[in-house]
Image (cartoon, one colour):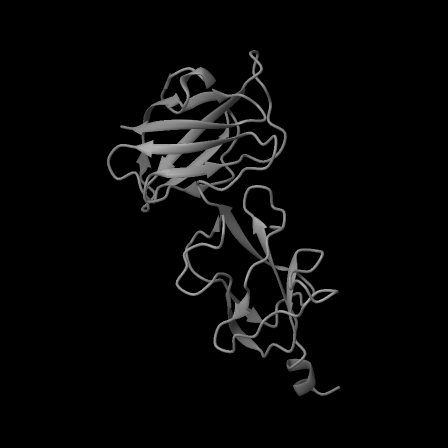
Length: 222
């Protein structure tokens, strides 16, 4: 088989994965390639382009840099999902491992539905310049390994992955960190639960939440 034939048989398998869980997002997305608007092949039965393994497979893609459009034109999100940084992902073909997935991380929007029995925080930052801030939350004493950003209203949804340890009161002890676009630290002065019955008012970045519930919390920035 000639080199030209190999070039035109390149495969690109794109997966859109949840930043928090690392699992492929089950929703169907309108993926296509910029320029050619080539769409991925259809799965068995022809109803969906998302395959059973969560991948969208493009075939006969030429070598070079390709940009993958994952949402409708002029839209910032698709359904309940958004991407940080904002923009369309790019890949250079051929990939180092042609059989590897090209994963694109997505984040649930602030008002997206949370999985059943998930533990998390549906938060709102208040104070000066609370929009577009980077928010990290982790179990107290453990490193921050996930993040999201607050929207134009200072709101966000954070779903720490994995099994979360409980404190002596049967609650999950968490810590929040907030930084601006330049990486400067923003102090969290205090927080309150909505409604008040779901948790006590707290000062500083440490707080606890009820497991298997997504708590609504307003965080006040100093």
